Amino acid sequence: MRQRTYMKLLAVCGTVFFFLIVLTTGRSSAVAPQGNPAAEWQRSKHANRETAIAEATVERRGTLAAHCGRCHSEQGFIAWVPQLLAGDYGLIKKPDGSAADVAYLQSLGLTVDRVRPITCRACHGDDFELRIRDNTPMLPAGFEAWAVGKGALCMTCHNTRNGRIQWDTTDPGRYTAPHVSAQADVILGKNSFFLNDTVNGASPHAIFTSDSCVTCHLTLGKNGHTFQASETVCANCHGPSMRIDFVQKPIETLLEQVKAAIERRVLAVRDQIGVVRKWDPATDQYTENFPLDGKQITKVAEILSIHGQISFRFTLADGTEVYARAGEIWDQPNGRRIFATSDPILRACWNYLLIKYDGSLGVHNPSFARDVLTATLKALR
Image 1 (tube, rainbow, N blue to C red):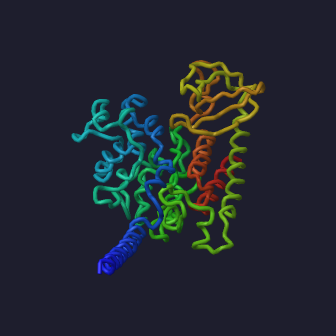
Image 2 (cartoon, rainbow, N blue to C red):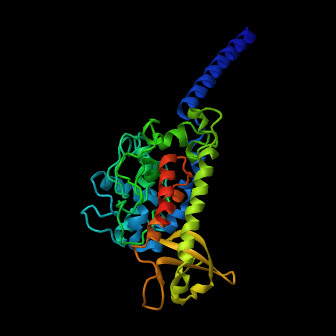
């Protein structure tokens, strides 16, 4: 009798255990079909707290944390989104609309000990819905994105962030470089010089994939919330024979050609260079009126952005390297700038960095990337 009771109890427990396994498995697969989002996020660039500290804290940036903190910190982004949705894409402001001071930025948590990187809470509200989707307000890059699904949130920060340019101007009047995350500009076909960007140059990747960025970097990807698109993601839509390098190889070639054309233009006037404001990448400090014999420049090793300005890394005859922003290269102290803002070199450098800083080597918008670079080559002839 006692033995039959034990058998019945074991049968009941076994049945309950079986259904618990089924229910738990089913619930897990429904909630996290792509794996563990938290673990994936830890491997993403969004999780880099060192970047948040460097770019979004008052100790490192002062009141400029109101600029960089918009997109480089959880607290800054959350504070900025309501302002953005209200039509103000400028720097983070106080609730009364005045400029954010250090005390206010500290109250948001933009300090070394409290700042957080781009976390789940930055992108998702308390109801876990995305804070922005489908359409964007006017972005810091000077345009709006329409009907781009969940990718609207990505585009909010992943744009050049330095205002709308006039594609056919002969003098932009500034030395500004595009921000390194130029994806929205490229995928929507905006903010290029020498090429009419007022027409519809948006890529099908932006407007015919339901969720634009999210479709390829998350939904169809294998890496979840790392947002790293897999090498084979193109095959989902374009078939198994399509490889990413089919697009990237010619764009890489054009980028090399544009860089070489810019270098030729720089070397053609190197004899005129006598002094620069030298930047040290190790210390992030400048040396004023650094004497530089332009005749010793043998190579423009890199075109880059230094503190938001178009810049060059020169290699000298003795192998040393000198970094200088394009607007801080003169013939003599307090003399003439070698590169005026009207010089086509500046617009060519913007275009080069626009495509380079997009990071996809043309994949986001192949036609636009090619057209920008070929127009740039023609302008430098």
